[in-house]
Structure formats: C-alpha cells, structure tokens
Image 1 (cartoon, rainbow, N blue to C red):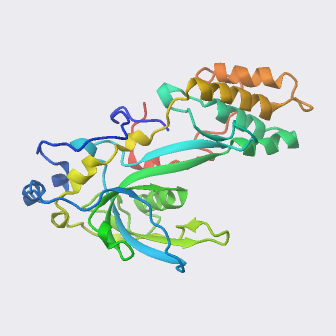
Image 2: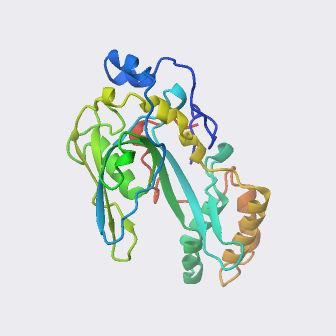
Image 3: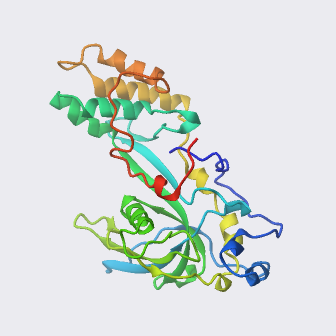
Length: 309
C-alpha cells in the first residue's frame, strides 16, 4: 500500500511515550480530559484484537469504537493501514505471501500485479486461469477501543489493533459516505458511532463478519478511558504493517514464479522475456494493459482524504 508522507517508519517494537505532553485526544472533548489523561491509572491488557468463538458457540457480539491514529502523540493523516498481499499458490518453496510492491519506495506498479492482469486479460483460457495463482488479498489495521466483550471482560477499556478485511472496510466506507444510516466519520470519537462486531461461521466453517454494523452516531465519553493515549503509544504504529520491499531472495523467487506462470502456450511467444521486462520497467511506462485506476481494489482511502505521495 502507498504509505503517507506523514506516516512514521514501521517499528513493530514501538515504545510507549514516557513524558506527559499535550495529548491529542483532548481535541475531541473538554479541557478536563487532559487532567484525566495525566493520571497514573494504567489501562488493562494491551495487544491485538483476535476474537475467537468458544467451543459450542456459533456467534459472538463485541462492541468496539474505532479510534483516530494518534500514535506517538502525533495526529496522523491516515486512520488505518491497508496492505495488499499476493498469496502464491504454486507447489514447492515458491508458495507463500509476497507484499504487493505498488507504492513501496515510490514504485508505481507491482511486477506480480502487472503479470496477473496480463494473464487475466488474456484470450487464452489456460493463461487466464493462471491469473488466480497471483491473486491478492487486502488487510486493514486500525486502533479500536473495546467497550463490551462478554467472553473476554478483561479486554474492556483497552485499546487494541484490529486487523479486518473488506467486509468491515466496506461498512466503514459506507458509514462515512452516508450509505449506512446517518453519515459520520467512524474514527471521530465525538461524532463517530459504536461498531457492533458480530462474528459467526459461514457455510464453510470460516469466520464471517458480514452481519457487523454501526449504531447511530454518539459521542464517546473519553473521561471514562483516561489511558487511551498511553495504551495506543505502547502498541506498534499502524505504518509498521505497511507492505515491505522484497528481499533479494524474494525478488529471485518472483522471477521464477513469473517464469512458471507465464509459460509458453499458444499465443504467448517470448512470454518469459516479456514478463521479466515488466519487472525491469515496473516503475516506468510500459505497454501492458492494466485495469482502470481502482478497478478490482478494495480502496477506501479516498473517503478519509488520505494524502498520497
């Protein structure tokens, strides 16, 4: 994903800010909040929000509130981190996950994406089917405050990092645009809305969040949670989940993956050379037909006015 010019560098071991400075969450409430936030009271457990269904249960409900990205006492211009990953399905050691390189170090294209769309747009049925080998999956990361959690009451009042998929990203997008009830920015504590996280199993037995929903807009009483800023600072920054540049080994693997998926069936003479050339020119203009901007992408950035480099 394209990272922001104001996003801090990724650091999965981000440390809590020790000095007591002006806390940005006071922007959303009255002046008394800053005094509350300076108290010595500590929050409960911190970490990653990973709800699971207890044995015998088919669903669960948790009340959450999305929080703005004020990590490190800095008001960032993005409230979630979106990362796209290619999950390669090839027998052998080449299989695995490879971060999409679009936006990494200023790259305008990702070699795997270029080849995937070239295959997808092919008139050759065999080549078209091979595009599935390079499919991407989007993951989103955001800070949330746990308001209610019957199965894990110890998490209530804690700030967590929620990893979510397009099912929830779409609901955030629609709430912000007014397509789901009263329009509001879910990341604004004063004007946002509680999110009812409904977890169930689909027909295949996998977790589904499609029935989750936002309630009507309401003001979050931040004075009840005086350590929000401190808890957030103790967690990794959202930008630490941004796509990483491929290692030398990964780059070599990608070369081989492209060679294998392109092959040389009828209609694709010199396909291997063409694929390799697409890597060399990933950041330059080329003649490969790509989909229109945003087509096929789970892109909600525009709804939050995130600045692009």
